[in-house]
Image (cartoon, rainbow, N blue to C red; front, side):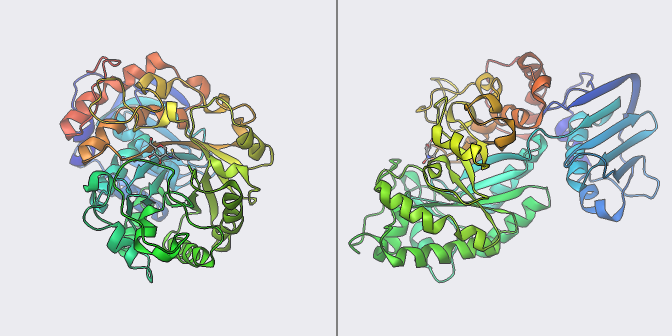
Length: 476
Ligand code: TNX
């Protein structure tokens, strides 16, 4: 309880029922009534919600003043929160809905304003990506990151596990991947070493799942594989070893479409990752394959795209994969700055779902402005307002609301060296993208968002979170 609410209540300002990010679908305040959570306030929950109630950190009692329940009539991930002077009733359409309602409670507490909130997400996929390849972050660091993401109802964590500069997941039978790709000297500038053992990865996935976050593992191929070819020279075109690289160039390495060894490697890796991942997705990258001739790219993907389905998973790829015939459940992740993409529109027209991650709106690794000490700028500068003030269903012609699975904010780590760096680029832009992904289109507005965001300044400061104090916001 202490941990839960002290983080969130540091200012003495009166909290209004609608002071929540992402903005709830419906808020009906009742003037005057409040319910204060004090030490000793108890929670009652049926057995199916014990896991969720544990996250409240309050004592349990059969007649607790905070009642958690399930109401299967509510939408998936939706919840209804009713606060009166006597107590709180939080009903969810599923345990996940109750969990998201708890996140709303955390933002409002400990003196809860009276009224009713009815809420549910616009999109089922609300993602954040962390690049562990260009710079490794430890399991504890990733867990701490998850703890911050869930407060904004993010429910997918995409882990970019492999790239030219590093390989961050143990693959049994292929020990040199992590000996070479996770050892000292890996990462951009050679300063981001480390990798996850299978057990550490499984533990991280379970930690995420306990918070209703699905881990989406990415093994990037056929490009972005220099570290693979350092470890296993038989996977290069001529079988000759290549030199390790720690610069931030892209588009120079490729697996070889015409070699059988390639597919033995890919099969082994994807099977391991599928076996370790209970979630429904495997991301196979597919981006920036400038070193793969187009015919080879096609031949490679025709063999590799069906592999996740053979392990019961849906395949996700960066939108370059839309150039080939896609398996039925394939999901395309759009990442460029262009305002249209014919191949992605064709994929959508044929029933494929799209994850929307335009770099000029969602790339957390872009600088805020010219003065940002870290970050890139190839997609321009990304202010909080730009991250907020756009609509996913209006971004790409031919990719409307029904085609969109969700929205994701990637954080590439070429310029990151610490958790403080991760947080500096993530906050406060991630809350902006989270509201784009959760809140109804008609309920969003920048003036309201900037006011609600201002209240997080003292909270993040008190919690030691290194956020960017952008001048766009009048921080409390
Ligand atoms: C493009 S976005 C990449 C990454 C870089 C990133 C830097 C995408 C699918 N590929 O390899 O890290 O830009 O912003």
